Amino acid sequence: MALSDTYEAVIGLEVHAQLLTETKAFCGCPTSFGAAPNTSTCPVCLGLPGALPVLNRKAVEFGIRLGLALESTIAPRSAFARKNYFYPDLPKGYQISQFEFPLCAGGGIDIDLPDGTRRRIGIDHAHLEEDAGKSIHDRGAETLVDVNRCGVPLLEIVTRPDLRSPREASLTLARIRQLVTYLEICDGTMEEGSLRCDANVSVRRRGEESLGTKTEVKNMNSFRNVERALEFEIQRQKRLIDDGGTILQETLLWDAERGVAVPMRSKEESHDYRYFPEPDLLPVRVDEAWIDAVRTTLPELPAARRDRFVASFGLPRYDADVLCAERGTAEYFEEALRVLAEKTESPPREVAKLVSNWVMTEVLRVAGEASLPVLHSPVSAARLAGLLALVQNGTISGTIAKEVFAAMLTGADAESIVRERGLVMISDGREILRSVQAVLSQFPEQVATYRAGGTKVFGFFVGEVMKRTGGKANPRVVTECLRKELETRG
Ligand code: ADP
Ligand code: ZN
Ligand code: MG
Image (cartoon, rainbow, N blue to C red; front, side, top):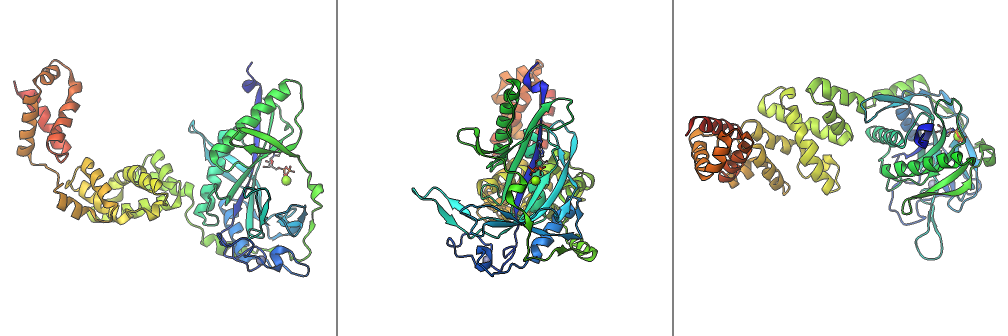
């Protein structure tokens, strides 16, 4: 039996989301990035003696937002502790973190597997903590330290060990990323470290109930690397066990360039950190009124929005998923659809697929190429609707619309481009008939092939007519006309 059949992987994620508050977790320093190194600091976030922390209410609110979205229980009373360790990027010598009493407990998040099934991944808990500074290793021989990030609020989201493959792990991370960005509590950029993921992984014989010894893999700053690193580590564990070895509980660092996870340190136990209650902060109390107030500010969540796109607009599930992947894309789509429905006086359902096709292809492509969020696309939703109205009312063909869209990137609107370039679709039967007849007499051999049953050449004729008319002929009229001519002539 292959190793892959004998063993199954067990994975749990710990995701750190950097919260988009204006100020740090326990002081008034700005969290904005790009400030000169070591300038956004104060006695509190540097941990100078006598400086007292004060909890940022906004960070708690953001934690509640996420907790509600994950269907977690929001603790009426949570508390902070000190996690003690030494590292150059931690001038205080301890990190303030919720430990025994996290803000959110339980809940879950749904992932859709490639085979079409949906699985619910349990959330163990989510807690608030502060970030450490940054060590900079790539400026010559010395390591530099920038402590601007010290004290920036983080929300750590810990899943239950419910994941069974690297793919499930990256899908779960993608869902968490989608959720925190929809909630606007984190910008979700993994390259810049606003969203970080550590993965705990073990293997066990299939059918086994108890969990194997786990390792923790760190430093995987993309979805692709989460999958690669877990793939690597699962294989290593399987082979080791098969060779009669034992897994050591340790922390590994993923080296993306070499494609290996290397041991960093033997895993510390929580007692190594000498956690103790943070004496300078009061417990966090969250009452029902606060939770209700936060609930009213929640946006429509991605899963609900996707289901609504399917139910109200009749979109395929696939389209709805692509459109709802990012909140900005979904908003762009809805705005374009609203304007188009209004302009063409059609029910949204009737024109939704047209808009969806354009957003999923041209709009996402152009935004991707410009590295811009779709909402800041050079062609705004309203201008796209202007273009699609021309398609919908038959002024231009879909092919021409692509050309017009490209021209719109410079800022001009669809109507004026169509007018200036003379791109109005030819639907006039007589004019199209002339082109059709010209094409048929130009290609007698292909006509013979068609008549002998080689109907595949039909597309070729359509293409030739389009060429002759500069792409402006109405494809529906061309098709009808060609059919008629081919059947009746000769
Ligand atoms: P630790 O005490 O080492 O922090 P926890 O029990 O708090 O471990 O779990 C941390 C993360 O590791 C969670 O995401 C959890 O789901 C996952 N996890 C726990 N045990 C295992 C295991 N045996 N195999 C894989 N993942 C695990
Ligand atoms: Zn500060
Ligand atoms: Mg733990």
